[in-house]
Length: 243
Image 1 (cartoon, rainbow, N blue to C red):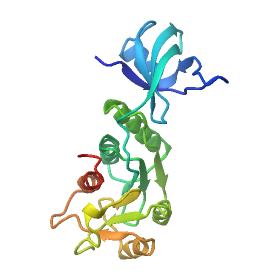
Image 2 (cartoon, rainbow, N blue to C red; image 1 turned 90 degrees about the horizontal axis):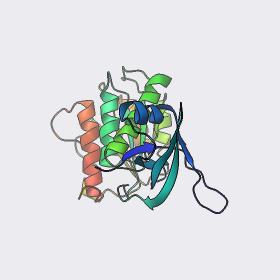
Image 3 (spheres, rainbow, N blue to C red; image 1 turned 180 degrees about the vertical axis):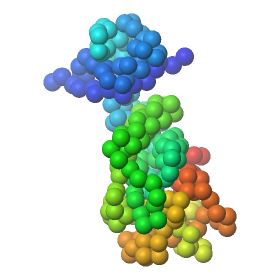
Image 4 (cartoon, rainbow, N blue to C red; image 1 turned 60 degrees about the vertical axis):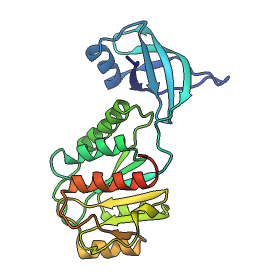
């Protein structure tokens, strides 16, 4: 059975060797109280940069584990293509579902936004929860980096955040047909999917002004979470990430 994986702050000494690492907070509580790990157990540490560190728990204290790093390597599970998913805030735990599946599929960035017909709301606790979901999904699928989840209260700010992406795709019910072929998707790419209420006409016009190509997701009406996962999956397949 492979060693359990934990996100930790890995620092380095002047000679470039990693220092002893402290595992604290939620990661420590999970390791100690759920997984029942103790001194001598082997684990894998992740610093969020795409590097994995093999480590041994050297000492167990009341509120932390001290770990000794024994090796490091670049992960081969991180995507080569930079894909940024922007999704409208969804009701209930549907945003969590989208974040979980997007991380598993290989997304690089995730933005959640509010729009005119969005009926869900976001607060600090929900945003913190989404980032925990991202970390858990990354560990489960053996990624070494967890995409940070950011929130945009204004839809225009969400669109502007993708300004540097040369390939910008906008899934919208107003699109009678796609303005771009999915197999022509190139990276870096930004994908926009709305909430349950869809988009207003002026939001579609704003996206067009920002350089987004309108994309159709077929003849059937998809649930918002289905649309996000399907759209991302097709784009990543076109980029060779799922092949």
